[in-house]
Amino acid sequence: MPTAQPLSPQDTCLRLPPVRLSAAHSPRSAILTPAAVLLLLVLGLTCMNRALIHPLRNYLLDFRSYYASGLALRAGLNPYNTAAVKSFVQLPGRQSAPPYVYSPPTLALCALASYLPYPSAQTPWLLLQFALAGAAFVLTLRRLRRPWYSQAAALTGVVFLLSRPFSELFRWGQWDMLPLALIAGGLLALDRRRALLGGTLLGLAAVAKVTPIALVAILLLRREKRAALAAIATIAAAVAL
Image 1: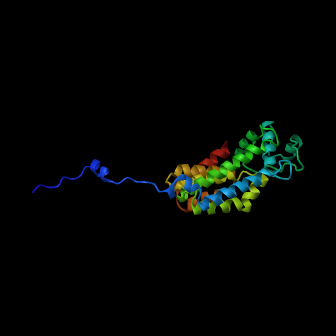
Image 2: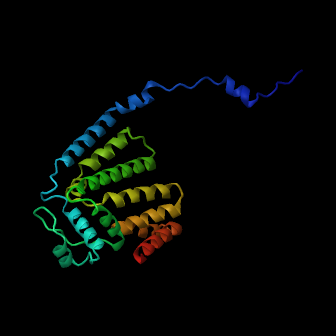
Image 3: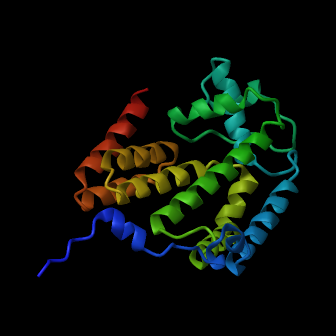
């Protein structure tokens, strides 16, 4: 009695029915989901609200500090000497620049922003913050393994855009979106077993803002030594520079 011959991989592939994508998973239908429409609507209203901020009123006060410190640094002055900065830098508007209280490595970004005239420099600064916020949002969704048009993504985005910290952030011109994007990237890297990259990104976030250093302590408590050492080495290198 003849035995049956096993099917080759080519024959098996030929017998499989074709896979067709349903209309519910098409890119057009994804944009029209209620969650995606709500997220896009809130995003559009947020952008309009930020565009109504007048550059010479009592807004973006922290950015005035960044800008003045950048000018002082380029002129060879000590950016942490508030009296020297105020006597050298005269910005239009009613408010004077507050003292600069951030770490020295962050002054490079301030000096870069000061090459543009004031208050025109506020526009690319806010655009950069929006881009960093978008990057943090995308990195967070990738870590959660959720598409941008899902209900979880819409809920996360709406709560984030309507929160008071986000509104105050853009009102005062702070740069909290930078450490936020670095934290999101660091957590995603740690989730994918890339300890050195994740620790380095968290270390850079701690350099930009002191509060993310608590994440380094959490890494030590969880005994993730490679990530913690990478973060500590990044902080030490930035301070040494």
